[in-house]
Length: 79
Length: 415
Ligand SMILES: Cc1cc2nc3c(=O)[nH]c(=O)nc-3n(C[C@H](O)[C@H](O)[C@H](O)COP(=O)(O)OP(=O)(O)OC[C@H]3O[C@@H](n4cnc5c(N)ncnc54)[C@H](O)[C@@H]3O)c2cc1C
Ligand code: FES
Image (cartoon, each protein chain N blue to C red):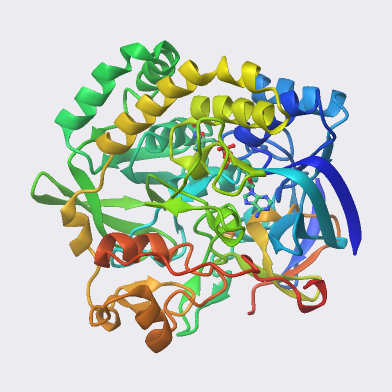
């Protein structure tokens, strides 16, 4: 298992889990806010739609569906 | 910026790209570049970091044994100078030099807007499958699978195996068309075997033909549940679920071919019998030349890899097989053609462009995607029209806008 922090809370997931799956596992379904303020979550699962973008270790606009979670990662969905 | 030179450069590590790289490596120095953490492409996407399919494992092992350079997690975003491409990777930009290029960039799902489709927990069919492969737990979750195409079956089968409760598969195509398509499958015995096995595993899942999703709302009460409405033979049915997995078949990913100047007609990359594009040193294989299923990707890959390395006699030996997969592709695409009713799903305030939140009602006055883009920013967000482009093509008959590099947003310092 690996442990990462999502919106300030620690969560453990199986190795190989994508950041997107870890976010949902943490109970969060709103990955980002759209330009009019709607809550959005993953759509395509394959790096095309950009709906799953989050901040990872301070870097913004990362597509969480294509990134494997790593121990100690800090993720936030406040974009 | 690092630099990698190859005689044959393959973009895309799915079925087509891998099967192009193998025969090419007998004659040339080959590099395969893919944007995922592992090879395999869509059909063989890794589950929790592991490839499961024995067929895919074998291909990947041969690639590794065959002195082929594999670069994962690298996103090719456009051409540099002649004979060079640029890719963004976690370690910065890579310049990829090539003599011959094979584009095997695959396809993506087509999404059609309906009221409520932007809610969280409404994903593509392949989209939800990919999330589950990435570790999302679907056990005991209720899933409505909807849209069109054989992918719905594959996804329902996969989700059920992972413990999901598949509420139904809503297939927009008419029953008679599907029956005709299924009857024609006798020419492709492996498809029959696969299809029959799936039908048996899914025997308790209603497969509703002539049925399509018309809207989704958050259910009252429980936080993430969704109520989906389905139009079924003129009647409306409401279904409660936790996820909706909805995709309307596939669209070829042709952006890279397009920025490299390869001719594209009717949404597919034009190739000759050797899988060569209109640009002499660029070949194309798999879904970008038309949606045809896994066998088509495999055989087109082989022909492209052989032809790109001068093994044209060996390439010709696969022509008959390729032609057969093309006939299958044609039957597939006509069986799952979209019905006109789907053009009327979106209401005036249904969002069409999810990046810029542009609603249907704001788009109807424009004659082309270009005009709409200028006036509303439709298609100008980070997905660069990959999601809304296929929708506005179907809804309004707009040709997709021209593609310009970078074909994906790239960090300033990597440009
Ligand atoms: C989401 C999804 C799920 C699917 N699931 C199934 C299934 O379960 N069963 C089934 O039979 N068929 C499935 N399909 C259909 C599938 O497309 C084909 O069966 C098969 O995967 C096609 O092989 P391919 O090599 O042509 O394309 P792909 O497998 O799509 O391979 C293309 C590869 O190129 C990569 N790529 C694209 N552009 C770039 C770039 N610019 N830079 C770097 N890399 C790039 C992609 O990430 C991908 O890995 C699915 C399709 C989609 C879109
Ligand atoms: S879900 Fe579409 S880019 Fe991640």
